[in-house]
Image (tube, rainbow, N blue to C red; front, side, top):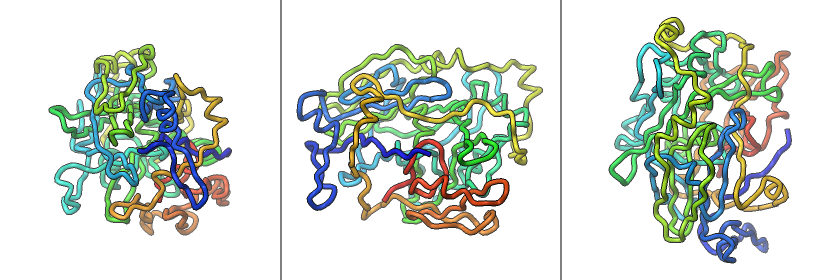
Length: 413
C-alpha cells in the first residue's frame, strides 16, 4: 500500500507556523490569501464518491455552491489551538427518500444513544475530521443502527460487515434508503445530513481481507480522555459539504448532492463571511434519481426481513468497491497536489482541555487470533489471513487502524 500524507486545509493566521525549532512551515491557503491569489483564507470541500463517480471538489478561497444544498449550519471553531470542528448531533435516523421502505417500518428515529451522565444535555458533540476514514461512535449507537440492518460486527477489524446473502441487503443498497444525522444550529432550523446506504457500502479490499468484504463504516468507539466525542471522517463527508473561513474561525456544514450534481457554480468566501449561500434542497433527490431504484409495494413486502442483525455469511456478491476519495477542482489540479510536499502539523498538538481521544480496547470476549496491540494511543486487534497469519505489516500506516481510504487516518494527538 502506497503511503501518502494529508493535504492540510489551513488554519488561522498569516500563513507561517513553527513546526519545530528552526523549521518554519506555511499554511497553504493563508499564503495564497496574503498574496492576493484567492479572496480569503478559506476553503470548501466535498469528498464525493469514487465508486459512484461523484467527483469531489476542493476549492481554495471559495466553494462550489452546487455542492451546498438546503440549510447551512455555521459553527465556531472549538479553540484556536486545535481548530477542532465540533458540531452538535441531536439524532440519527433511518429513512427512505421515495417509494416504499425496504424495512418493516417507514423510518426509525432516536438511534443516537446519549449517556445522560455525560452532561451533554441532549446533544452529542461530533468532531468533523476529513483525515479519518470512518464514523467513530459509541458502541451503543452503532448497535442501535445495526439492529435494523443485515450487518454483523467482526471482531478482528472492529467493523460491521454486510451480509450480502440477505435479501434485505440489495433492497437497502439499491433503494433510496438513507442514514440521517440531525445537527443543531444557531438558526431556526436544524440541519440534516442524509447519507444514502449506497455510500455506506464500502469495501475492505485484498490488502485487508481475503476475499474482499463489504462493510458498513460505523466504528464502535469509546473515548478514553473524558471528551466522549464522536468523530466523523471521510465516510460521512461523502454526502456532506464542509466549508471553512479561517479568518472568522468558523466552519460550515450542509447536505451535499449525489452522482447527478449540478454544474459547478464557484463562489468566493469573503474574509468576513459568517455564512454561505446554498442551492435548494430538492436538488438532493434529483441528484440521486438516476442511481436509486425506488421499491414498489410488492417488492418491499417480499424483501423485508426482521430488524435484527443476521449472522455473517462469507459473502461473495459484492457491489463495486466504494472508496471515498477527494477530487480537487477549480484552483488546484490533482497533479499539482501530488507534487506538493506540505509538512503542516496544525491540529496535531495535544489539547489540554479535550484532546483527541484514543480507542478503548475491545472486550476480552471479542478478541480473535491474538491480543490487542497499542499503537499511537489505539488498542486494536490485528487482522489475520485465512491461514491464521497476521497481516499487521500490510495495514500499518502508523495509526493502528485497518482502513483502505488513506494512510495515517486515525484520530490524532
